[in-house]
Image (cartoon, rainbow, N blue to C red; front, side, top):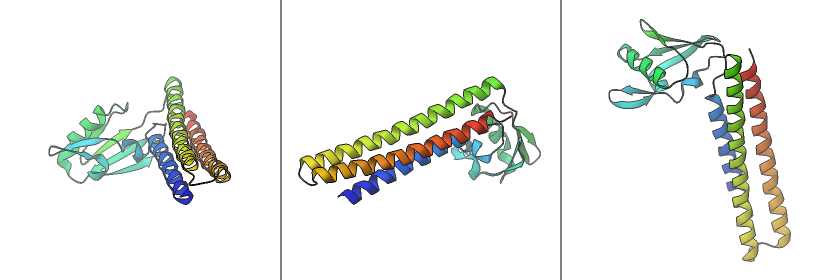
Length: 185
């Protein structure tokens, strides 16, 4: 019973950590990364399709993204989708590709992005603590139902706390790195 609980708890915490990582990649820094466009859906013959499934996205330099669609006819749809995504970016259609210059962030925008990074990280830590609470409730119920002893309960709660500490520390590290990236000029 305990091994299953440990595995389930750690798996759920790992998923929460992955979610925080995914959210952080969407936070715009001054550098161009193809992941910035991950959430963008393009109207492709009436179907909302992820941009990265319709085109190759490259970074020729740190301040530019180049989107090369498999079909040239969807370039206007790609431009529309990027503008609609409200990323603060202005796509430029050039022949058979779309250039996306990434302007440097001003100080106010940088601070705003820093606050967003902290909020996303805190949300991740809350998710980790909620998983810990669920695991501890299961442990207390198991002890109450005489499935485990008081000593096993204490040991198991310590193990769950160790998982929690490990994952919240990883989130703190992600926050720190992303903040440095955002504040970098």
